[in-house]
Image (cartoon, rainbow, N blue to C red):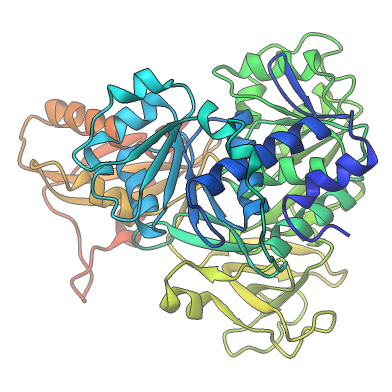
Length: 535
C-alpha cells in the first residue's frame, strides 16, 4: 500500500515499469527509468550530507530535474521546498531563510538573480546548478563559500554506491509549500506524506483517473493544485506531460499534440485560453477538466464545455492548509452552478458559528475542514498554527480525534441537500489569477522606494483575474506620471507578474479610522463606487 511520496512512483514501477511516467517536450521517461533517476539523485543528495529532515529548496521551472529532486527528497527522508519559478529574489530569499534550506537546486540565471541575497543564508551550504558544468561553476564567486555542484556530478558512479537507509513514517514531514498569509510574509505549510498521498488518492478517485490518462501539467509545482497533477497521475500509473508555456496558444497546441485526457487550471488561465483559436478536434481526447483557485464565471464554463464537448468539468474549492476541501460533481453543475459542492473523499467539512456550534441550513458560517488531508501546521509559527489549526470539533462524525481541523477563514452556507456555497473571505487576502496575495507583503515592497511615503493595497473586481490589485500611493514626487513609471519599474523588478498592481492611484493622504489605522474599507468603497471591471 502506498503511504510515502516516493512510493507513488515505485508502486507504478511494480505494475507497469515500461509505461511512460513523465514527458517534457520530446523526452520521455518510463516509470522504471524515472525511479532509477530518483534513486540516483537521492544517492547524490546523500553524498552531500543531506539527511532526514533537511530542507531542500527547488527553484526551477517545470522540468525533469524538478520532479526527480522532489521524489528523491522523499526517498532520502529530506523535505522538499518547491519555490515558484516566477518569484523574484526577495521572495526566494525569504522562503529559503525562513525554512533554513541546506541545499538549493536551481539554474544559472536564477542563481545570478539571487547573488545579492544568497550570502546571507546561514544554513545554506550547497547549491546544485542544473545547467552548468564544473568549469562554468569555477567562474561563479560569492562572498560566502558555497559548495557549487553540477547536476551531472551528483549522478556519478561514485554516488551510486551510497546505500540509502531511512526510517520514515507516513506522518513525517514531506514538504513545505509557501502561500501568502493575510498579514505579513508567506507562511510555510507543512505537508506530511499522508497529506500528499491521500490527496492524490482522493482526487484520482473522484476524477476516475486510470493508467490510460495523459495529464497536462500547466500549474507551478509549488502550488498544491499543481503538485497534485503529478502525484495523482503517478498514483494511477498515467502519463504526466510537463508544459512551461509562453502563450495560451502553446497550451491549445499541446492538448492536441499530446492527446491530453485531463487538465487543470485556474480561472485566469481558462480565460486566457478562450482568447485564442481552438482548431477543430483540438480537444477530442479530453475527458475531464478541473478548476480551482477561484470561482469560474458561468459564461467561461459554458464556452469551455463547447471547446471540450467530451469533457466533464469538475469545479473544486480548497486551501493549501487542507489540500482540496470540496468539489462539485459534473452531474450537478447544471442544477447548482454556483455551488462549491460537497466534501472530497477523506475529508469532512463542517459549517460552524463563531461559538463553535453547527450552523442551520442556509445559515452563513465558517468552513472547517477535518481529517487526514489537513496539514501539520505552519513552519516555525506556533501562533499562526494555533489560530488556524485546532482540535477536531465534536460535531465531526466520520473523522476520529487523531486529526486536526483547519478553520478556513472563509464564510460559506450549506443548503438542505448538503451542497455548500461560498459567501466571502474573512480576511483581507487578495485572490488574483489563482494566487493568494498578501497586501502587507506588497505594501512593504512599495515602501522600499524613497519617494513612496505611504502605500495601501486594495482589490477591485475583475472578470479576467478574479480580483485586480490596486496600489494607493502617497508620494513626494509631484510628477505622478514619473512616479507611476518608477513604481511599476520597481514592482516588475521585485515581484512576480501576478503581484504587480494593475493600477496605481495617488492620494495626498490615506484615510484612517478611529484607531489610526488605514481605512481599507473606505478606500475600497471609494475606488470601486464607479466600478468598471479591471481586465
